[in-house]
Amino acid sequence: MNEGELFLTDQVPLRTRALIPSTLKTAYAAAAGFIADTPMLSVPSAQDNHGRIISWAVDFGFQKLIESGQWTCDYRWRPFARPTGRYLEIRLSHSVVTISQVSDPEKQPRDVVFRANKRLNNQPYLDLEEFINENRVLGLPHSLLIHGHQTLDFIHLGIPHGQHSAGYIYKTPNLLNMPHDVTAQQAQEENTDIEAMMSLREEIERWQRENGQ
Image 1 (cartoon, rainbow, N blue to C red):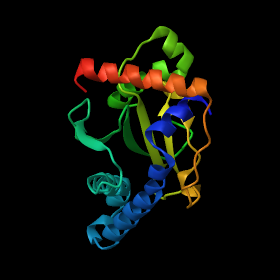
Image 2 (cartoon, one colour; image 1 turned 90 degrees about the vertical axis):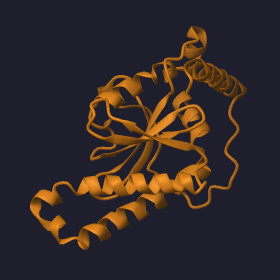
Image 3 (spheres, one colour; image 1 turned 135 degrees about the vertical axis):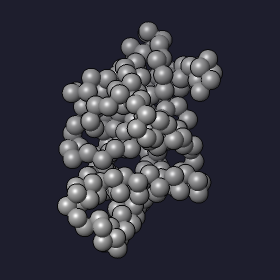
């Protein structure tokens, strides 16, 4: 298990990941039903923007998932760098997750300012040994939850690389293909990996205290 996979598994374990496909399937179905029941959304100009309705349904679904206590974390509505709206930021113990629709799961979403700023926080986590040697934290690590654009063909959690064109430091397999039974104990990691993870968590916690996060 590489460093990115180890960190993402720590932040979003398999039991939590198992909730994600059903939440997205419900959101897509709700969006499709709303579109079908709303005649004005059948005009071509509206059809070109059905992705926005899917996005709103997905945000609503994850907000309710967190508020219900099924996903034990917090969330905030954060303004875009340019004041054109807000986006959902899911706040985990030592990182944040944002959600994006993408047409190509191998590529990062469109390079907007807030995502560009967030992914720079991931630079120290490219290599845990390098992180420990340099002992530096720039901000909370950022992961992306990406899903299919018009149809729900894929769902991935990924840690975006600091260089947009480089894609991801680590990306999960398609969560739509997760086995239903996730109760089996996960494989034990090497002691050196666990030690590195604990050091990383401690440094992130110190950064959180010093920056009021």
